[in-house]
Amino acid sequence: MSEQIRTDTLPLLHSPYQAYHVQAHREELVARLLRAAREDGGIEPLPGLRLYRASAPTGLTHGVSEPAFCVVAQGSKEVFLGDERYQYDPMHYLLVTAELPVVSHVIEASRERPYLSLSLKLDPVLVSSVMVEAGHFSPRPSANVRAINVSALNESLLEAVVRLVRLVESPAEAPFLMPLIVREIIYRLLRGEQGERLRHIASQDGHTQRIVKAIGRLRKEFDKPLRIEEIAQELGMSISSFHHHFKAVTAMSPLQYQKQIRLQEARRLMLAEGLDAASAGFRVGYNDAAHFNREYKRLFGLSPLRDVERLRGGGMVNAG
Image 1 (cartoon, rainbow, N blue to C red):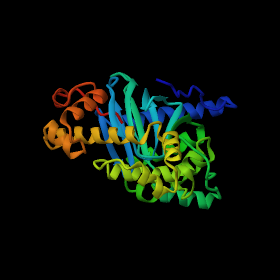
Image 2 (image 1 turned 120 degrees about the vertical axis):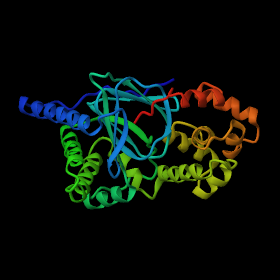
Image 3 (image 1 turned 180 degrees about the vertical axis):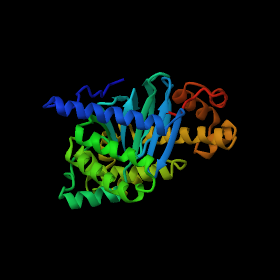
Image 4 (image 1 turned 60 degrees about the horizontal axis):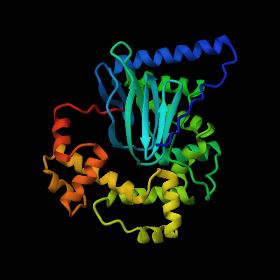
């Protein structure tokens, strides 16, 4: 398994005054998240803003990411995309710019110092609007940009995050101030080292945006046969080019992507709707129950029956 681990820290602090303010922002963020998320699990106190708390390291959790800006206030977390690993902590943020089947877990947390994090959903229309106002141009059409990465969280971005979280305790002000702060966060992300990645959310040209369209189709039609040639033709790409660019953005092949989406949906159907393994497998596109069971066990480590029994017994913690 290859690793994509960012080890850079915050930019050099030029004075004790600056260092003091950064530390003060970190401490305030922790204090406010502790008050807002008093129990383990996730909450959404403001539209598009999700907070999460965990009092112990969690097991691996499978899920589908959405375009989002993610910050850890305390503790640390690992996210796996295909064969690549991303780790972030209070000094780094995670940026995701497409719907991706990921595996994640909290790796640093305790009852005394719980893991605390927040994620802000990114709206492509809003990103595009900020790009226009800020005078940022669209990315080069030929550029391939992986749809996830980790970067250092600088003081300006951290301070904007703190002001956003303050609104959780000021609900009357949130409808007026939250849009302004979210625009500021997007602006600062556009000016940062992941600006090129973020611009791909709003770009209507280039390979990355075409792959994002393909991802949307695979998410919608996950239970249908995978027709690579048809998709590539609709995107104006050759089959080999489509495969190459799809993997460059998602770290997996289209078939691997579809398989993970299918199996995650089958798991949800068994848990939420009480379907048996054969029925769930058929609903997501598997006509061979034995094949479905093999693929399921390969991804989740257990047969469908044993996995669902474990989850219903409280064996999985949803990590946000």
